[in-house]
Every structure is written in structure tokens, then in C-alpha cells.
Length: 259
Image 1: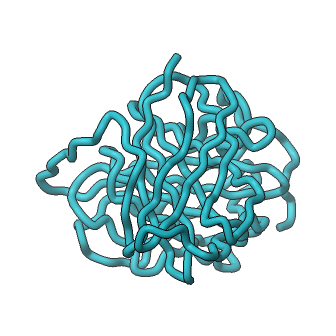
Image 2: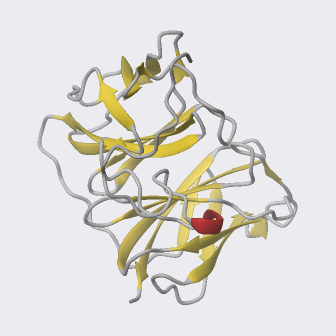
């Protein structure tokens, strides 16, 4: 990509890695702005008919124009995470990138009415960023209640349990997710995005995006571990993904972080 600059931020204040990675892979807030670390998120459309699929496109720009080349991270050039603002309706997509830098998401839809947050997570010119933009689907919305804390979830016939001791803000915490089927730990976890699991946490209130690196674990243990540090007290929703037996499983958990 010709004419790329090597500059840092675009003047926005930032703490930690703007992609949502902190020191040693610990989570730091990201996705709070449509512009960060010299990049801007420019969607072609922000309003959608609920449940209607369309080919949605967006571009990432910097001071030199449209970004056309992205570095692979976790096996993909761009990760697009979309969540309704009541922290439901999670989707994780991987746009294709055309030669002119158009990022294309086929059969994209907002499944139900409401306000959503789209997070574009990428690395370009060695600079990581997570940018956020609001999307809307008109209609009456019923905000779903959430538990103050939840440590067990089921999906696709699998049961997943979050194993963690007390979680305090600013402290290193080991989060382990154990995947079971029919009461037994799965015999082997397959790779998903180059690792045994994927974890995104969103902070209640501002939807700060926290993306945590998985630790190296035995694929035959039925367990995926993450070493995380949550920056502030409050409630967070965790979206954990794993691939046992070739089946992509997405589960969600709620945690309250102490001060």
C-alpha cells in the first residue's frame, strides 16, 4: 500500500493498545471511537431493515487515504464484531477486502430492531486498532434482562463453564472455560482463529471492547484459558467462542468486577 505513513495516534487520548490488547496480552479498552491510532472507520450504511440481509461495505482510512492492505491477525485480515447495545445479538464476521480497500460483508443483517455497535479490529502498517461505529435497525425494542453474574452457558449441545476466582479491577486474572458434552469434558478442542478459543468482553455503560489473548493449553483438556486484566470495576459481558468436534460454539457470560 503505497504512501502509508508511520505516524502514531490521531490526537485522541489512548491508554494501552487501541486494539483492545494491553501489556502482555491483558485487555485494555478499545472501540470507544470511530477514529483511533491514525485510522477512521467509514461505513457506507448505518441503518438497516431488521432481519433483511444485504452486502454491507465499509472502509478504513488514514491520513493518506483508504487503507488497502491489512496484516493477518488470528488468521484473518479484519475481525468485525457486532453486538446490540443491550449486549445481546452477538456476531463475529470476517470481511473480504477488495483491491481498492472496500471491506465487504456478505449477507449481513441486524437480526432485530435496536441500536448496535460494530467493532472493526485489525492491524495495518504494524499499527493495531479497534474502531467502533453505531448501527441502527428501526422498530420497537425489548431490552433483555441480564443476570448480575453467570458462570454457565449452553450452545449447540455443549455446556461451557467459566472457572475463575474473585475478579478484581486492575489485577491479573486467569479465566478458564471448560467445555463439556453429555456431562464429560470434550476429548479435543479444534483451533478457531489460530487458537483454542476466542474471547471478547464488553463493559456495560460504554461498550468498551476488551479482546484477550488465549494462553497455550492442551487441546485434549477440554479447557481454554485466558490471562486477563479488567481496567475498571463494573459489569462486563464475555463472549467466548470455541470449536469442539468442528462445531463453532458461541456462549456468553456476565461478570461483576470488584474495585
